Each structure stands twice: as structure tokens, then as C-alpha cells.
Amino acid sequence: MHKKENLYYPSEEVKKNANINNEEVYNKGGEDPISFWEERANDIVWREKWKESFSHNPPYFSWFSGGKLNITESFLDANKESDKTAVLFLPEPEEEGEKKISYKELYKEVNRFANALKSAGVKKGDPVGIYMPMIPEAVVAMLACARIGAMHTVVFSAFSSSALRIRMQDTSAKVLITADGYYRGGRVNNLKESADEGVKETSIEKVVVANRVNNEVSLNEKDVWWSDFIKDQPDELEAQEMDSEDPMFILYTSGSTGKPKGVIHTCGGYAVQTKATAKMIFDMKEDDIFWSMADIGWITGHTYTVYAPLICGATMVLFEGVPNWPQADRWASIIDDYKVSIFYTAPTAIRMFKMQTKEVKNELSSLRILGSVGEPIDEVSWEWFFREVGKERCPVVDTWWQTETGGVLITSLPGVGPFRPTFTGRPLPGVKFDILDSEGNSVPANKEGDLVIMPPFTPGMLRGLYKNEEKYIKTYFTEHGESIFYTSDTAYKDDNGLVRIVGRADDVIKVAGHRLTTGELENAITKNESVAECAVAGIKDEIKGEVPVAFLVLKEEREKEELHEEIAEKLRKDIGPIALIKNIYIVSDIPKTRSGKMMRRVIKKLFTGEDLGDLSTLSNPESVEILKEAIKKDE
Ligand code: WTA
Image (cartoon, protein in one colour):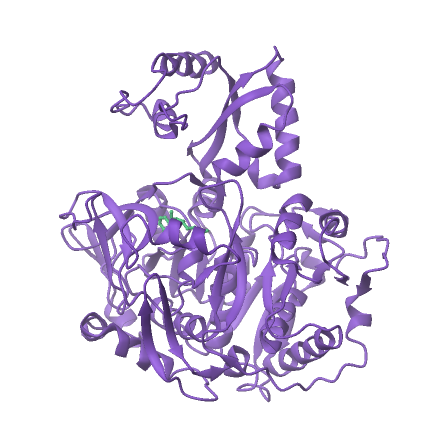
């Protein structure tokens, strides 16, 4: 890599080997995005070619309609005789050693489980809950759903039983796949207990339990061990034929209100986009060992931990544990020991690695590309990642995307560049984007505005929110009209056209890269009997990027420590440990607009010392001073 002014460019060595190393693809993608994606679509296995590449009936759109396929045929059937490792499973306890699952074995395992699901009555189009840790059975479960055309709905295993219940109630799933527990940070977690709680008051009729840690679990009437469930099931099964536009999976994410929404992705477009982006952005090739640290409970875990490496015929690393446990540099040892060639992680992890391991002693010579995702990365962390991990040899792709976009849409390509720390980069070829002011005009360089995606959008973008059409329209296709997808992110471009993400314009906060909304937290907090009113805001944190704090107006006098503990417990129970609240401030009033809307923008700025801006819309401007006092008192 070499640097010219403030930009980095790939070396000749990187360029020589890259799938893409010149501007031509950008020109093609810019001129005619539809034919650009059509070309990419020829790279996956179709049973029948599509009839219409793109069609748009605002706010709805479709890609490759009429095409028939099953995503699993592109990698399971295609490699069913192959002994190459598909899944490299690294358990948390090191003494357990790694487990390699070849493509051939994966094909059989998936078919066995898919046959069992079918025997249990699961049909094409049915939602299936997956509440599992990072173990091979989780991957098998996801792929088995895809194989029979059932919609997997993965719920992050660190989410609480209540969070699981809300999602299962919303989908009305009949089957849940879970595990007895998992290892994490030296502890054995009892996942089955949460699952038992979570399926109460839902329509779940069957719970399949994988045995991971030999936890003592009580099997209820609905429960069946994984091993019994697949017993005598054949390891052959013809994949269910799907239409390109059939839904493939649902993934719940946090939006502007307290209730999570089920983002729907479809079969054809998602498959095409996943393969195309992996080949472009990570320069993925069949001999790569790709380690994406993201948990399967998040979109990154779906697209890049699981589907991308498989659909590219590469090897995916599936790591169960915490990357800095039991040694701070376990992540670096993993890279060396297993010759990881592409490493995809998040700024929070990078900041943690940097804090704990200033100088990385490992060689890390197998690495060729580094990636970052989920939150803005600061310059110091970017430089550290580039120097200490990539040894100034590996391009760092800072990838911008969302649960809704299904795959990365903005980042500079490793063989082309340029890279500028803290800037996510250029839109991918085939992606039309813009940055607009509130009137809908494109803003000039270096001016902030709303990041939007323009038609023809991209094949892998969401097609709806489960059972919530109104919200789909309101959230994505109202702010700038029904033909422009609004991302809810604020961004600007530099003079070279590189995009910098400033942050969310809505109530979403990113805690250690995990997407939460202030509304969800407020819902849980106001259930506390002492709390009359509450406002949650994300404030800057050295390691986690952002952490939530709460301002509370109380009905009665309470001791702060005790109340904080009560609230923390409630958040753990309603959402999970990621909703850990950093601080609470007891105040007599909270800034609100005349219409009663909480002014979070103002609250956030109280911590950064920024100018508070126009306060004339507040009905109670004096409350700002009250908050200031409370923050000062606590310092
Ligand atoms: C933020 C994660 C800065 C952004 C894949 C977006 C980023 C939200 C980046 C989506 C990045 C994602 N730089 N911010 N490279 N990538 N974001 O749905 O605010 O969990 O809207 O998807 O994360 O979060 P989600």
C-alpha cells in the first residue's frame, strides 16, 4: 500500500492478484446498473433464467422476477463431492481443538436436517426461529431452512427470553431451533433456560435442542434433541425450487420505535448480491480462509459470516468464543494458526485489540485484506489496524451497509482504492446513491445531508417488513418520496467523492456495533414503578463507540445506585446484556418539543459540548440547564 497526500492506494502486488483492479467496472456499473447486476447474476446457479431483471412500482421493486433457484444449490450441490473445508469451527475451549466440516459433509448434514424439518411439517414459506450460538449446527439450521424454502429468523443468542418471545410472536413460527448452551468468556451459558422462557405465549410447537455443553436441561413435551430429530433421516434431498422474489429470511432489527421490525430479504437478489459483493469487496477466491467475527444474530453474520464464503466456495471460520479470551491476543493467534486470509471485524473490537495489545507480536502473514463494519471508525484505530494487523500491506475496506441493504453498498475496492481513514469510501459499481438536503437537492462536497439509495436500488435490498407494510413505506420511502430509499444515516462526500458516515439521524444507537433503539430501552425503563418519564441517548464511548445513558423523572425519591441496578436488571431481562446502561441521571424535567417529542439531539450534544443549536422549539427550555447540572454533578 502506498500513501499520496491523505489517501492510500493498493500496491502493485495487491492489484496484480485482485478480482478487480481498474476503473472499468465502475464505468460499467455507473452507466447501466441493471446490466451490471445481470452480469453478476450469471455467477450463481439458476434452475430457470429470470424473465424481468428489474421492475419498479414505487415503493416496491423486484429483481430477476420469474427466475427459479435455490441458493444452496450454488454451493452445496455444486461442491457435494468436495473434501475441502467449508466450515472451520473454532470452539471457545482451546483444548477441544478445531472441527472441520467439508463441503461434502455439509451437504449431507444440511439435507438430513432439512428432511427432519420437512417431517416435522415445515413447508416452503414457513418462518422458523433459530436461537443459537456460533456452532456448526446453527449454520446447518440456517442452510436447511433455505434448502426447503422456509424463512429462517435468527435471534441473537445473547438476546433475552423476552426479546426472543416478541420475535416469535410476530412471526408465529411453529418451530424453534436452539442449543442447551454455549461457552463464552470462560462461562457456560444456559441458553435452553432462556429458550424455555421465550417460547411461552408463542405458537412454537416444537423446539429442537442441539447439545453443545452437556448442560443439564429438562426436556419438555415440545422439545427434541437434535440427534433424535435427525435420526434415520436421509442425507439426500432435492432443494425446494424458489422464485427469485420469494422471501428467503426475516431478520429483526431495531428501528425508530420500541418494537423491532422484521426485515425481509428475497432469494434471488440476495444470492446474487452476496456473491458479487464478496468477490468485489473482499476479493474472495476459493482458496480464501475468511473470518468474519460477526455473530449469526446480526445481518453481517448472515451475509458475510455464513453465506458469502460458502457461495464463493471458500472456507468460513466459525468462532464460538470471545476474541480476546483467554489471552488478549487470541484473535491474532487464530489468524496465524489457521492462516486466515481475510479478516472482517468491527471498530469496537479493533479499539479493544489496540488497547490490550499495542504491538502485535504475531506475524499475521497470511492476511491479505482487512475489513471493518457497523459503526464509524476513528482515525487512530484505522491506522493501528492498518499498521499493526495489516502490516501496511493489506487494504482496509471500511464497509458501509445496513440490515436493510442485505450487503455492503459503500466501500472502496481493495484492488482499486483509494482509501481514506474514517471515510467508508466509494459506492460500489452498480449502486446509485446520493446525499440530499431536506428539500431533496444533492448537497455539494463536504456538506452533510441524508444518505439515500436511488433506483434501481440493488438486488439484495429488503423487499418489506414482515406484516408491516405501512412501516416499510413510512421508514424508507417517505422522507424523500416513494422512489428514493432513505437510509436514516447522515453523511457527506469529500472532494474525491469518498463518503464519510456521520451517524444515524433517527433514534438508533450503535453499542459496540450492535443496533439498538432508544425506544426499546425507554420501554423497558418506564416499566419501573418509580419512573415517571425517561429519555435515553447514546453518548460517545472510547471502546464501544456509543453507550446509552438515561435521564429519569421520578414519581418518588430513590437512591440512585439502587435504581440503576434495578434498571440494569430489567434491561438485561427485556433485551439482553448488550443493553447495559452506562449511567442514569435523576432530573426534574426532560427537554421536549411543544408536541411532546423528546429532544434527543439536544441531550446528546450536552455531552459533546457542541453548540446546542436552536432551542426555540422546546416547550421547556429551562430543562436544558437542569440536565447540564445533573451531568456536571456526576463528573
Ligand atoms: C452504521 C450493519 C459507519 C450505520 C451492517 C448504519 C456504519 C447502521 C458502517 C446499520 C460503517 C454500518 N461506517 N457506520 N462502515 N456500517 N454503519 O443494520 O449507521 O446493524 O445505518 O447493519 O450501522 O446497522 P445494521
